[in-house]
View 1: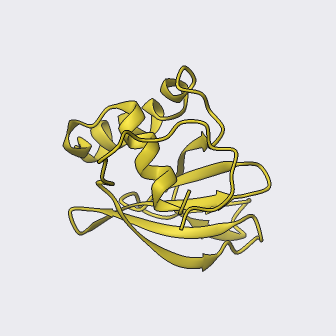
View 2: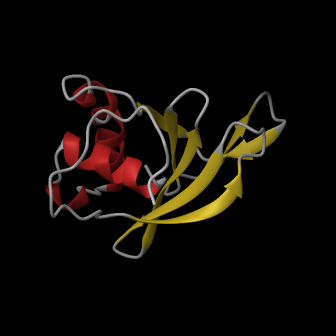
Length: 128
């Protein structure tokens, strides 16, 4: 059941999510809920859903973990942030950086989905 949110853009009728997401637990810093998303059965990205800011931080699970916060912890690199309340005109500003990283670095074309479809996949993956 989708949660209450400020979501403005919804997928068309009959749409299905190309990602499979699994709830992992709360973020280690209390910034939201963590979901691991897969495409075709392989881990792809980690989504940190922050309800307070209406944002989803996207981390690449195909990249090696890196030192963060001056060596205090290790984490996969952040490859983008998606604003949940983005309008259809703003969605292309949210998703291309993430999609470009996946395509250029990992040759993951996401079945050639467009910005809007990927945006809806991310929001659907966190239950919005």
